[in-house]
Length: 530
Image (tube, rainbow, N blue to C red; front, side, top):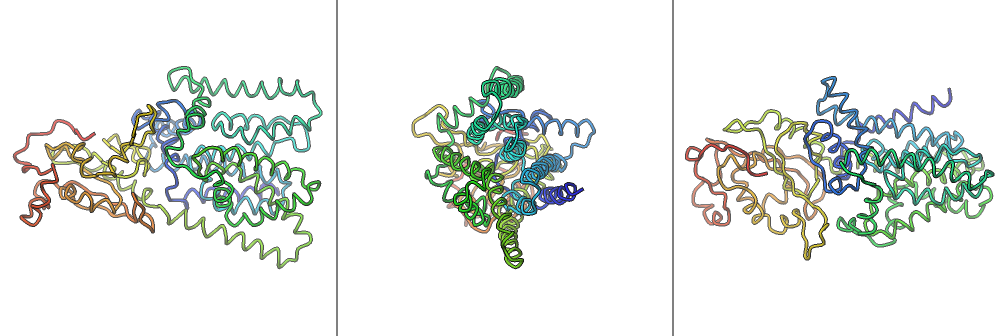
């Protein structure tokens, strides 16, 4: 009964995060899961270069695709459910992993409290990220790890983790060596009958799935390592100094919990014989950070799998400290940790970068209802940094859409620049080079952009009227802004800025999109802008 009482608040918090967290974090939440599943199930969508090159496994998207297929068979495949149910599925898995954390730590009160309050886990625990899945599987595997026994059940979730995210092996290599060193079983027999056998079974099934869906024999973990580690393709998307995970990455993920984590480190170092599990976890955390620091491209989410290890160290230290602390100190500590996590969780989940999520229902309505003069459906152009929004999974209409791509330099060309970089260097030139001149109906029916860009392409936007302005963030950056703007192309009879007379004539020479009236144009047989 006590376990049920512990699981219910965990489940409530994780399910609540599905509805509270309504902001944009990273593109992979959609483009490496939902978009892939949508294309698999409904036959249309977009696959990024990672799927063309085969560095991603289809295992996780197939789980979501199975959910989509059930909805389609029941004729319940509304865009709202396509967005909501995968997040609920991930939230349930995260809730189970939180429950396993509670069991692993000896069902301590501090464990239940600390697994519920971390801002980063609330922020990401229901997102459809491979990193979230990895963190959940890591926690589950740790809860079955033979800290005081001989069980090898943990090898199954650990092996799945390593297949989906090969960098997870950095965590499990030192832990596996620790297991082999402390085990009373025959080491060779343990390796052959458990480690190798389970590894081969998981890898064989994963390779079979990926080979079928990629269409040729492929080992995605090898491809992942080849592109991201050996060829350092990840640095194309940004690089950080070697110490970033130590000084910024992990402290940010922990937030206010960094303070009790430091306390846990000090206690473990001073009394290592009393904290054998925490000692091994700290060794694993340190080695993992060292190895990950050798890779140029670094992100907060890449250390999310270390969160349960850190929380265990905190739980272990605070539980022992609680016996000698006063009631006032206990409640003060808990309150500081709670408030210190609630504030960033609320802000990042409801305020910061909320624009893309609020944008998609409006685009969905446009995709469903809009028809131009020739009864053509909407065709939407995103003039934003690549992958700034979700895509077909949130619209669920087979309309033409186009965004600025950002493939890395796979062919190692000299002075390479991706399409997004070329656009932002000279937006007017890119538009004049890529958007058809005639007829007017060949222009995209809708243009989506961040507000700082509007001034730069104001001449082009004379053919459009502002339809929506959506709040996004508090600060302008080089390529993003405070608001997302949605423009709709003006139809025949609507006021158009390029017909206003002499005051704009001086600008017209720079724009190739000065068109004759619609009455003088031939019918457009197709949409050419894509």
